[in-house]
Amino acid sequence: MAYHYAKFGAQIVITARREKVLQQVAEKCLSMGAQKTLYIAADMSSDSDPGKVVDFAVDQLGGLDYLVLNHIGSTPFSMWEGDVQHLEWLMKVNFLSYAQMAWKALPSLEQSKGSLVVVSSVLGKLSSPFVAPYTSTKFALNGFFGALTHELAMKNSNVSITTCTLGLIDTDSAMEKVKDVSHVKAYPASEAALNIIKTGATRQRDLFYPWYTYIVTLIRDFFPDARDYAIQKSYSYTP
Ligand SMILES: NC(=O)c1ccc[n+]([C@@H]2O[C@H](COP(=O)([O-])OP(=O)(O)OC[C@H]3O[C@@H](n4cnc5c(N)ncnc54)[C@H](OP(=O)(O)O)[C@@H]3O)[C@@H](O)[C@H]2O)c1
Image (cartoon, rainbow, N blue to C red; front, top):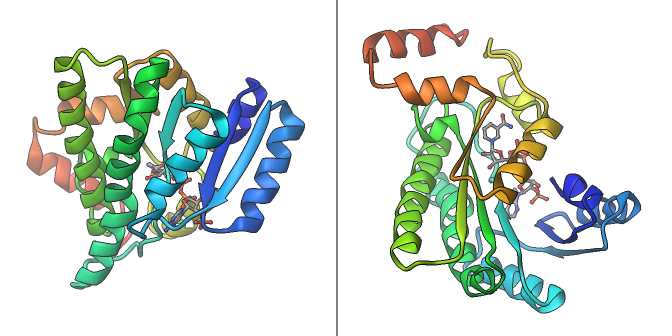
């Protein structure tokens, strides 16, 4: 997404934990046409870092047009074995930090008639095996930002919220997790990223990418037994 924003000539702040990688991405963004690219290393499981990142971006850029919330913590692709500590940690990274950053950025986004873009998943609409902690965080995001969408509308806010419902995307991390178990086709990360940016820029409420995530969302409650059978059969698993 940073590279697409760079090609549009944006001023960008990126964040993650690995400073070296951030530095490399920032350099590439500049070479691709970004007006300005800054980075700040931060850990979204910390109580204070989510707020610090937004403060840094607002100070350095003098305001915000978009806040794109995309980061996720690493989580095992396996059956739930009762690790509540991991669940708490993942909730902090994938959900609570999103709520913190969104709240912190709202005054600046109000000023610019800006947009909040929340990257969620079809697993925030539909439960699936092997991803209990992850799917919980994505359901939480959809509930929270759904409520915030109502509240901003009721307050006549200038800020739009876009929620992105993604299917399987061919990022290295996702491919590594599902390589031996899933038969679902993965869609290209660069195309997903461009769709996220366009949907946010046009202030649309939802992105469904790829197309089947929309169909899944529409029909998920029609035939629950058939749905669950199909989901379970889409994985290779022997107990
Ligand atoms: N790929 C898919 O199939 C797929 C499907 C549906 C939805 N999505 C959604 O798309 C988004 C991007 O997914 P992805 O596949 O690109 O994920 P990814 O490859 O795992 O990337 C995660 C990013 O978050 C950063 N991160 C991890 N832990 C962090 C922490 N504690 N604090 C701050 N940053 C942290 C990582 O950098 P550091 O390690 O340096 O911190 C990395 O830049 C996510 O919201 C995901 O849920 C993806």
